[in-house]
Amino acid sequence: MNTDTLNPAPPSADDRASKRMLALKYAEDGRLATRHEMGDERASLTNSERIKLEKPGPQVWRDIVENYSKNGFESIHEDDFERFKWVGVYQQKPKDGYFMMRVKVAGGQLNNAQLRGMSAVARTFADGIGDITTRQTIQIHWLTIENMPAVMDVLGQVGLGAKHELFGACGDICRNIVSSPLTGLDPRDVLDPTEFFLEANRFFSSNLDYADLPRKYKAAIVGHREGAQCEINDISFYGVQRSDGRVGYGVMVGGGLSTEPHLALDLEVFVVPEDGMTVMEAVTRIFRDHGYRKSRKHARFKYLVADWGAAKVRAEIESILGRPMEDAERTQSGIRGYQDLYGVHPQKQPGLNFLGVPVVAGRLTSDQLDAIADISQELGSGDVRLTVMQSLYIINVPDANVAEAAARLEYIGLPIDVSPVRGGVVACTGTQYCNLAVTETKQRAHDLVNLLDAGVKWSESDFFRVNVNGCPNSCGQHWIADVGLQGCTKKIDGELVEHYDMFLGGQLGDEARFNRRIKRVAAEEVAPAIQRAVDKYQNGRAEGESFAHWVARHTDEELAEIL
Image (cartoon, rainbow, N blue to C red; front, side, top):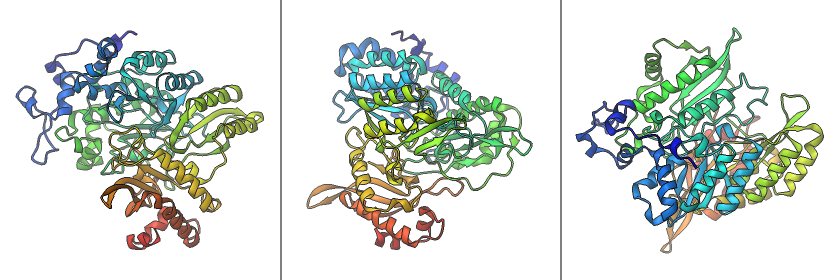
C-alpha cells in the first residue's frame, strides 16, 4: 500500500500554526479567548492539543504500516493511540491489543462490492460482526494492529478506507457526512444533494487544513428538512424551495448531544447549490479558528454557537465570503422529526420500491451482510443505504421482486413488517467493546424489543423510539428518544448493579425538545416500566397526540409514579 497519500511531508510547527490557524484559546472563563502565537504557550496546551501539534493525526497511518503492524501492539507510542482515531481506529476494551475500526460511508450509500468488502473484513480479520452506527457508517471490532494494512487494502479495493477517503471517521475532524438514506428516491426531496455531500466528505477527509479542529465536527446535507436529524448536527444543510421556484439550502448550526445537549440554530439564510461548499468551508473555518481549545469539555462547536448566537455566526460567514447572504423565506411549519420507514414503499421511479429493513441495535453478522448483498444484487440494483437509526434500505426493487426479497430477508432474521419498537430501538456499543460504557446495550436492546413486542399492542402506536446508551456520552442519542436509557450503576449489598436513568419525551422537528430524566430503574425493570408508560399513553392520549406531547403535560412526579 502506498502511504504517501496519507502522509505528505509534515509542515513545521510554525508553518502549521500559521497555515492551519491553530489557535490556542485562553480566557478567564476557560473558553472564550483570542489567538496566541506558538512557542512559550505550548506548555499550556491540553494533552490532545499537544499531540495534534506535534504530528498531524492522519500521518499516523505511515507509522501503522511501516512500524506498528510489523512490531506489534507493544511497540505503539502512547500518543499515537490518540492519533489512530484520524484513520478510524480506536482501542477496544480492555485495551490489550484489539481495536475497533469505523469506516466512512458518505450519506450511508454502499454499492454491492463495498457491502461485500465490509463483510469480508469482519469475517476475515474481526469477529464476524458489523455494527451500523448512528452516522451511517459500519463499525468492526476485534482487529489487531498487525492486520491493519491488509484490512485497509481490502477496503481500498472497493473504494473505502484510507486509500480513498484519507482521514477516518473519528478524531477532531469532520466526521462521516450524513444524508437521507432515500436521497434520489424520495419525492419529498427539493433537490438532490448527492454531489454536494460526496464532494464535502472527500474534501474534509483529505485536507490537512481541516485535520485539526477543536473537537469532532458532525455534518448533515439533505434534500429536504426531514431527511436527517438536522437539529443535532454541528452543521446541517437542508433543501428548500422559495416562492419564486428557486431551490437551495437552509443552514442550521450548533447542534450536538453528549452530556450537555444543544439544539441547532437556524441561520435563516438561503444558499444556492453552487455556493454550498463555499459556505460549509466558511463555517468550518470559524470552528477551526475560533473554537475553544483550552477545555476538551467545551470544545464542541455548539458551545461557540451558543455564546455567539446565530446572528454573529452569520455575520462572520459573510465576512469570510466578502458579501451578504440571502435571507431565507419564512420557515415552513409542521416538520416532523426524522424517522426510518420500514416495509415496502414505492420510489419516485415508477415500478421500483425500497424495502426498509429494521436492524435491532444495528448489529449484523457477516453471513447476514453477504445475504443482504445477494438479495440486493439479485432482486434490486445491488445498492444499500444505511440509516442514522442503525438500519438499512434495499433500493430499486421492481414490483415483481418485492415478495421474494421480503421473504428472503425474513429467512435471515430481518423481517420488514415489524412493530414500532422493533424499528425504533437504537443502541451504542456498550460494555462489550467500549471502554467508557458501564452497562451492556446491544443484547439489552434485543431483550427489550422481545419483551415489549409481547406486552404492548403496538398497532395503536405509529412511531416509538427507545435509545439505549451505556454511559452519559450519548453515542446512542438517548436525549432525542421517546424513551432514552442512560446506563449507570448502583451499589446494592456491596456490589455494583446495572441500572438505567430513564428519560421520557424527546422529539425532533419544528417542536424539537430533549427528554427529561424521570427515574433510575434496575436494568431488568426497564421493559416493564416502559410498558406501563406506553399503556398509560395509549389509554390517556388525546386524538393525534404524540408520546412527547403526552409526556409534556405530565409532571416528573406523575411520570415517575407511572414508571
